Length: 289
Length: 249
Image (cartoon, rainbow over all chains, first blue to last red; front, side, top):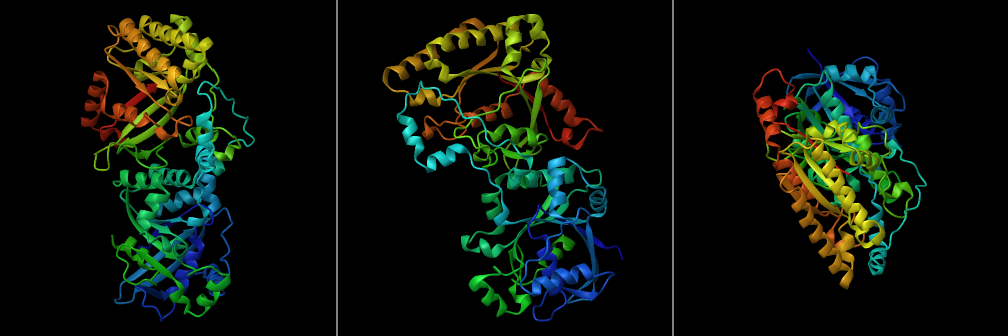
């Protein structure tokens, strides 16, 4: 059986490994009726077990710091059927994606991943968004603009020299993310339409906004939203909000989390999501559409 | 502006020069440590400019994309062109341009030692480009009064005088070049209207963009039609794309 290969795409600390840890637990438990469950192990599961143990212990899941892809593989089956699915993911480190943007190079191993990819999951974390502010926005907030208006229009000002040189790594998250997708779409092995699940991680942090994940992306990352809308012939997208941890690992949240069954910590919202604890829903969408 | 959302219903659809755009934006952002917004200056490095690329979709339901190439030209380069038609002929990119913007700085309208020189330099540049045959007959030439927030923020007689000067100069541009430039236009922008925040960030830029999207050079339009109907082209070229080279000063 030909395996389904999905790319996990995301800048550092966007929740890729937490998603995998929560997934590995979900497909092996019976409390939450996930659409997919583990059929059998496939090769070395040490990495998955390690990150899953951290997740079950309410500890931050160690970020994948390596500069090579850690491949994970699993045989799943539909819970309400016999259809078997072989999934493989390269758990590419966020740093690797950061380097794509900064150094304008792809690693050979990532190139190979693209070659066999049937789709992908793009991760965005609301707490790690770089959203540079224009100086005038700050000035307006500080009420300095009114003061300026009083000054003579003829007065010429000489801006101070920059104290901080431009750093490509500090570019806005949405710019870097669009560039990652452009690199993907320009790759010789890219096959359109490419199925892309957009996962907004740590959804518990933004759920109070009462926005859907797609509207949240439109508001917070408008450049990315425009790109995906205008490139609909290249990318078929579906938006999800996923809280793989279920909440913060400190304060009151931790007590509440510890009172729950681990699989019920997971929260997921999005188009077509039927079970709010089923983290396999994006995978199901990727496989079926 | 596209990082905040679509402009005049035009959607961002891609960019091949992200780092260059980002570098240009740096001095206007808090990350730079500047107290006031600024833009990096280009240094003169011969008659071949760098280009910035932007791909747009003319509304969410439009088919295909439009590719823009913007030249990123130092003022010094145009100084050479203004002073010599031979130098001007080296600016070969001008002949490919669909739209040419000549920017005049409204801040200088309030500086008596600079205002007349600025206007004369712009006229000399256009004259040199026309006399050396570097403007194609059907290209669009737009005189842009940039930083118009200085005019809007001015008071009383100063404001009246500045507006009168703009009108007077527009009449002179028309009288001197109107018979040689079929598509001569005038426009006002305030990309960063700090002097008059009511004008909003990017004031006037959206209208320019709308013109670039809808108004092509006739020859260039024909090229696009040929390309879109041909076989064996890249996918992007089959999608009714066009190169819009826009020059600015």
